[in-house]
Length: 371
Ligand SMILES: [Zn+2]
Image 1 (cartoon, rainbow, N blue to C red):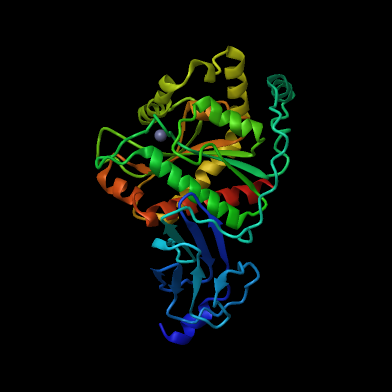
Image 2 (tube, protein in one colour; image 1 turned 135 degrees about the horizontal axis):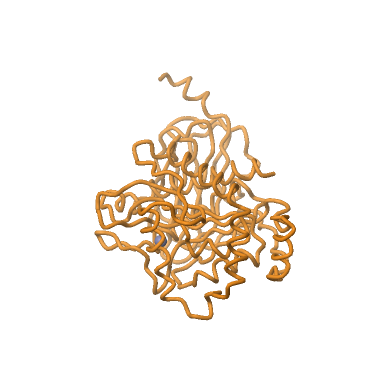
């Protein structure tokens, strides 16, 4: 490919930086990111493209990104702290790039990096009677007016490690990393959307509390993120579930695995009265079409992001964590932590970034379809 052609391929690059629990995310969106090199030195991170970036859009640049002009071939981000390491990954289509800079201490950024998401509405819970009345009227979603809030649920946490891989890595850590990345990418791509995580640190949150948070926030969508496990270590691939009675033995096995955590729940956190269960099932059957559309979109985006991995399809199972949600809800099993190869994937930034981006793209597709 000749140089002139490469030059003409980048028409827009925008940068966004977000404070994270362990660093910052820099995302660049262009027609092609070329072949970047990232270097941390002292308190700066330098990103080089080896080619002129030919910027068109620069409006979103935070003021503290230095030396990036329309004709530069890279840029430098200056921090107040010494940077311990910088890691980066490209999306499968090479259109976006994400950079994580890690400092020894928490990085505090000036408050110019991103517009704060809108404040949450009052947190009055939809009372059961209100939901019940709406469901009886056949008016399934009086609370889903605009697509303005999503709850991302990192599976497991705290004393519940989830599945454990051959090399000892725990599902709860991988699901949190991917979920934080999904949140960061959604803030970039849908700045008006309120993104709520059921946990942002390694802590135990009961299954009942997770859906309660979604209902209290009047979320329009609930996405639970998990890693799969099977006794057969060669089992691999990705699959997405929505709530229904499990149809196959495999789905029943995954359902049992993810519902196991109920034993760890305090009794009070589990709404076990018949009315709650009935309501939850009615709600999820009303949202079944929307949930299955989203599940299909996630599978197809994963298929594009991971063309050589196995697409295990959209499945139905009776996951407890989806049960109490009064909104469309899916559970994504991004890969098998019990498969040594996929476990290594889950441990790599590149794999997790592709997975997070596939989830984000399907949420955007879903939002466009619903509104
Ligand atoms: Zn899980």
